[in-house]
Figure 1 (cartoon, rainbow, N blue to C red):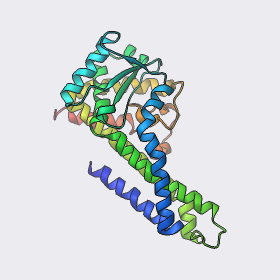
Figure 2 (figure 1 turned 180 degrees about the horizontal axis):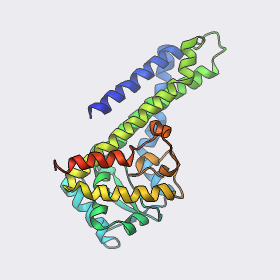
Figure 3 (figure 1 turned 135 degrees about the vertical axis):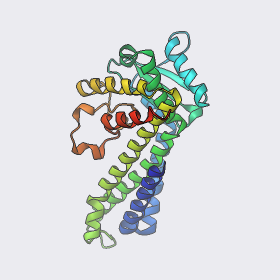
Figure 4 (figure 1 turned 180 degrees about the vertical axis):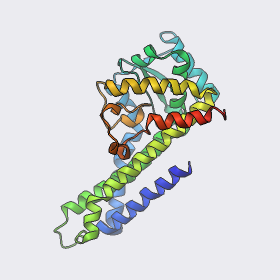
Length: 277
């Protein structure tokens, strides 16, 4: 949690620096308001949009008894309200959680995930998603998006106003703001996302008391993700999934901008947890 706090403070400092450099207090305030407005909509309605995008179908204890039962048991163990449960008609195995808080949460698994994983592995994956819900990761991600988005808006304003008499973007500091600050903000935002993935893995290990279930699942999912890509996957929703849908397209440098840690690192951390849970 401390790492997340440090990264969030870093985003705020970047925002304050760029805002003051480009537009002073007024410019900073306007960019912040605009970013808040955009992410307010995302925070309250993104769950419905993403479920629709992936054609997720709601299920219950009658038409998907095993899946629904696993989620119900995990919710009880975690002390959370029962989320809505969905199946995504997609053969590439993956899963995600969405919703602005535990009272409005949803968890979804693809048909492929339910087909290739056994019951224990499915429980490990869904425990990871329930940990995201418990830790309010959608809210944390939305706040990070506000500041990263505001920094990008300020940099775009600086780019447009480069030749303006009132612009504060005329020197080397302005060039730095336009070119490097949005990149720095994106890197910090992705680092926050990766930190929350580690936290959700840890939460799953303690919730199931069997880290090896999630380890086995991640190994299988990573193998598929490197060879197959989900049909409707896009960069805006990649952070929601337990495995990055674009794993097969990444190289070493892409790690800085990845929403997920490497599966190798996640497995190493889970291995250490086997002695603690």
